[in-house]
Image (cartoon, rainbow, N blue to C red; front, side, top):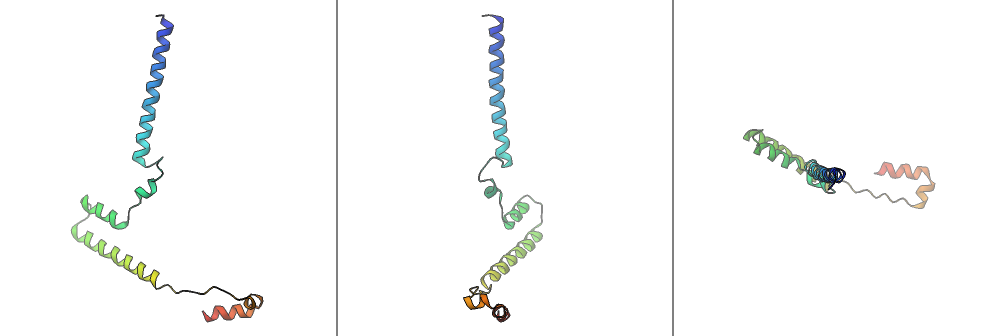
Length: 112
């Protein structure tokens, strides 16, 4: 085996091994940072209550602070749900006579 063949073999093997290492490393980087994943936004999206639970589990907040924040979040959720269910329903249909008469549109808006 000649010296040129040996050098070519070593360079080729080095290139292949380096390529495999880079692909593996970049693959690990993309999975740990959430990049390159189609579901990364869905996987990383946590509710405020889940984040609060994580803080409590890590010992970042006290029992009293956890309970206070949890009650606040639950009240906010209840308020949001009530606000959505009590939203007024408007009938936005306008008949053809109202569209041709500007005063009819004004009267309709005032009646709402």
